[in-house]
Amino acid sequence: MKKQDLLFLTASTTAPDSTIVSINLVENGVIQILPQNADEWPYQTLLEAINDGWRIIKFPEQALLLNEDTSYGLGCEYVLEKINKY
Image 1 (tube, helix red, strand yellow):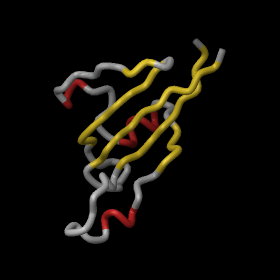
Image 2 (cartoon, one colour):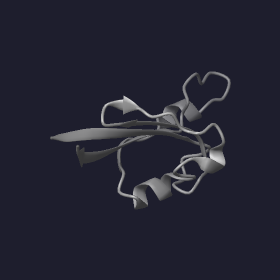
Image 3 (cartoon, helix red, strand yellow):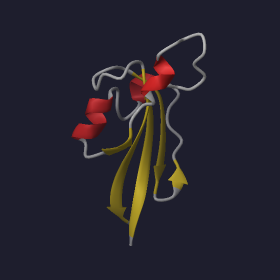
Image 4 (spheres, one colour):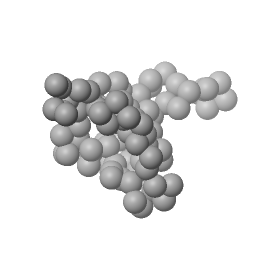
């Protein structure tokens, strides 16, 4: 059976090589517990995840970045997917 894995990355900017500031991973329908230390995360940039086969399915909401005083969203959050056989 094929299942969708999801990777949620929040980057410091919208640039593909910007540093990841938060990460969440769902594999085989289970939320994975990742290390708190960012140096131990599987990816340090969005580009690393893309090069490992993850596909972007949601880009950051650019409008959230226009005015820091009125922005309430994360702004630079990406959602990526992989389809795997389990």
